[in-house]
Amino acid sequence: MNEGVLISYVVAAILFIFGIKMLGSASTARKGNLLSSFGMLIAIVATLTEANLDYQWIAAGIIIGALIGVVAAKRVEMTGMPELVALLNGFGGAASFLVGWAQYMALYNNQEVNIPYFEASVIFIAIFIGAITSSGSLIAWGKLSGTMGGSPITFYGQKVLNMVFIVGTSSLGVAFTILGAGVSGPSILYAFLALSLLLGVMLVIPIGGGDMPVVISLLNSLSGLAACAAGFVLGNVVLIVAGSLVGASGLILTVIMCKAMNRSLINVVLGGFGGSSSGSKEFKGEMKPMNVADAFYVLEAANKVLFIPGYGMAVAQAQHVVRELSDLLENNGCEVGYAIHPVAGRMPGHMNVLLAEADVPYEQLLEMDAANAQLPLTDVAIVIGANDVVNPAAQEDPGSPIYGMPIINAHQAKTVFCLKRGQGTGFSGLQNQLFGMDNTRMVYGDAKSTIASLVNEFKNTD
Image (cartoon, rainbow, N blue to C red; front, side, top):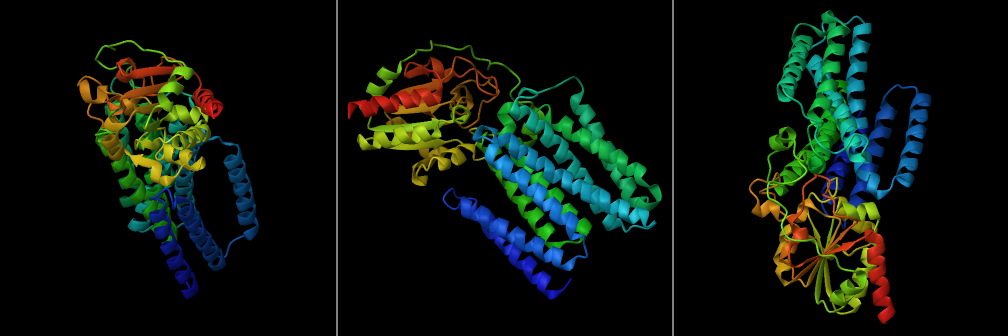
């Protein structure tokens, strides 16, 4: 590797680090994404400059991939972003296990029988993690898109079967590495590849919809680790660095989200949360509907309003009219904020992305603890399509599957408006005790249409 390529890799790695750091803030996330992309461009150009490759195939791959990416970016709605992210994680895992597979077959076809232990082990790791990420991400996509439903799929002896898959795959990997990767031939490789793909499916199907944000974050981390292993397979420094950064940052985000749910990662992976249709406590109270006109009068007199968005806001694509209502409330002398739960929506940062798209000022976005400190002084909390993250059962019902999960204390506001299409449960299937409380009013209908009607009420009074 020549000096110019090494310098390019160092510059690319520095850009990756700064780019990921900038992703930690909503105000700098877009710049961080561009910075990391520029770093990857430098790394790709440096690699192509050094390697003796057929540029025609590479150019064709870049053009086709770029076209697919542009079409996906233009056509996929914000409601479809979680499943798109799941697919992208799957593609990353598939690329890594294909790299490991191709490298082994190249060595085997060159009749290199005595493949070094280290090289054989990283080939196994790249295929193992990459295959799990690929098949697991496809299942996550199916759950998020509604293709296979969001409820956990469980059966008797499932955990034992998973353990058999883990032990069997690990044993084949050890045999592949120690007994001689070249001597054994591709048969062992095909066996642990098949078991790894099955393991990815088996690990994700018992996980319910309420845990999908954590699953996506974990799969993102695994895709990074798979890329890191592929970097060792190819002996590419920048791929090792990039994969390590993605893997570490994804794991940190996963831990943060688990803490936000007051659950361990093992509990998320093995718990099967989201399978029950209700908590243990019987729903108390009565859902009290309110029409838009009455809701307007309450908001007109309010001095402090907090919006609490959830996946329903994404489904209704209501973020822009929410911003418009927020501006009208501020013009009326009202203080406005947005309470963001870490696992609101179906992927990490889902609500932040939606509100950023609507140009909501970053200083109005409140993390859970800051929002909870303000809620007792809030005149109206407007819950837009959120369910589990505002469910008091997490604090009051020891028998509830979400008991102990920190929530946004919407019930502490003087008045709560819950915007919902109907009386159904949330994505995890749990009944929300908030809906029956004395200070809660249900405003039924499409969230975007409801907010737009409130906007019109304010405009008609001017």
